Amino acid sequence: MLLTLTGCSKDTVDSLKRLGLPEAASDRATYVHDLWIGSWIAAGIVGVAVWALILWVAFRYRRRADDELPDQVRYNLPIEVLYTIAPLIVVAVLFFFTIETQNKVLEPVANPDHTILVVGQQWSWTFSYLEEDAVDGKSVYDVGTPAQLPELWLVKDQTVTFELRSPDVIHSFWVPSFAMKLDVVPGRDNAFSVTPQRAGEFAGRCAELCGWQHSRMLFTLKVVDQAAFDAHLQDLQEA
Figure 1 (cartoon, rainbow, N blue to C red):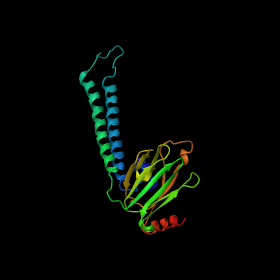
Figure 2: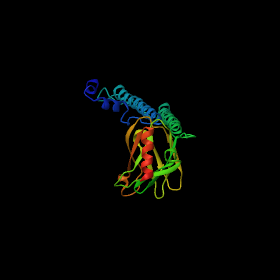
Figure 3: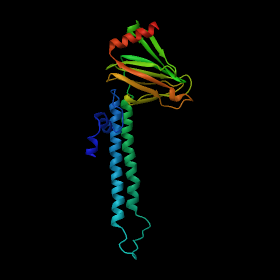
């Protein structure tokens, strides 16, 4: 295993350490990362224990002679209690940590630096930057199409709250590098907050089957500095 890893690039090794998760680009992504790694560790422990018991029983109680017949039992109450209670405990522990992570990820921010209204419509996105100082307290927006992907611009290390709306069917707003996905439901106001912590360009998409052009419902997310963000808002205002 170690010999194989020596032939891998640093990016590949880092991806293996994250067990396939994208590199975290927001403050909330670390919570999901910890839950993901913890779940794999728990699954590994359970898997090793199950296989160890299977192999031990197969070896310990193997037939040693052609005319030997193992003891025949109808039931074993302690074992039955064990394999009923043990899975319930495992599920309860995973449920507890999942809810705890969900609460941390969805914890609202009282006074975010930016508020963006995200409208998911068949089959693209509209991003409205609400009451931004860079455009004299006005709101500006960017509307995309399947042929021309919209761009969502954020400022590094500044908190943003996304308000999610849909006028037609259920969509799902997903940025893999943020480890965050939330449904966009008609008639229901969903929202979440996040702080981008890594500058760069990231892919975003709809993660809910929403019609025949669902696969084209993409967008590009750019995390930049304040000056570039303000210049982009000015461009949207003048467009």
